[in-house]
Length: 97
Image (cartoon, rainbow, N blue to C red):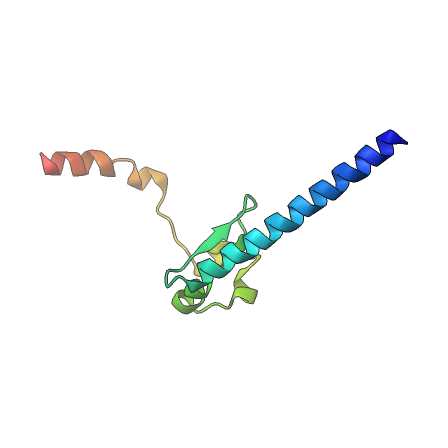
């Protein structure tokens, strides 16, 4: 019986902590929405998990459309191959000398 009581107490404590962290994250997200800068968060799955109002204004994509998308697909990002960039540092150094 004591083990069950301990487990319930631990469960309640973790639930309370989770609720507090959720409130904290919501408050932080509200602060990010006040920023004029475009801010978005990309998860480990390379999908947008947060998109603030500054990003909506700059990129003209609503949060509802952006969240869950790949930022590269959404923004039509193009990258140069790494081989094209490999010598840039050395060239820039030799030009500065």
